[in-house]
Image (cartoon, rainbow, N blue to C red; front, side, top):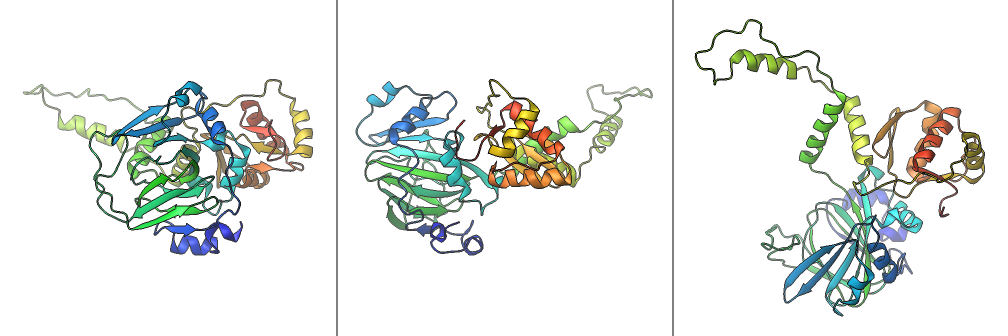
Length: 378
């Protein structure tokens, strides 16, 4: 990575001194960066069925939120000031967005959420708020004023459609221009206000709550744990109070539930499948005219292959995880597939063992990977 991205800090120093600890302002993090798309192209994305978008307006201190997909006519009726368009998962649509995210690979891919892009005319913003995740706010075109605060008062405005802080007290303020970046750890209050027509690129890193993880792990156990037997009571005794739950029933069911066991392998498989599970709105498109496996092997040995922009891939131990599924692989295949997980592409995919090729071909038929070098569109 270029040293400018973290203001001359090494990734190790940044992680030790700033990550989840305190904000960092970097002037010229990406010199000359004007963005990856125009505001018109962002509006086009917001009109797509497979994109998640929000349109936020403010008038007379009243906030309104509308959810996409939108029509182009939706934007022709907007006022000149004080509105914001937000589009999530822009990395699902632009190879350049994936390339941008890879510049932040000093943070594990398991923590990455998405690239959100916002556009706002002068005065636009989403109000003072705080996030539960780490975020890098990279300025594209235009200028945005950021106010931040370490305040502990997290009370929110009642009945607002957004989580807006009731009493925001800014402690620091900067105006960011193209290529500047602000890192904020979770829970840090902030307020961004567009000074002119501007676009901001938010690189967010997910941090699920333990309650969410617990709920999802219980669902995982439901699908992977089998407890044999059935409740029975051949020695049932007459009860003077039929409405009471007997101690024998509590004991027998407690014994059965005590048979539910899990270990490190179960936790690893759960984490891998959970963190790579596509969001509900994400769908994959198989190739319309798939080539044979032999042809596939020949093509990737010359042209390489890349993950589909919507694919999420992680590795752990003997397993490779892709889009919510676990794939046990051998040692040789794992080395190649780990490179794919790290880089999201294999520029030259020659010399792969037959097991890796067979698995990659299966993913190709699902639409999870594509033939071709990184940066090329299908």
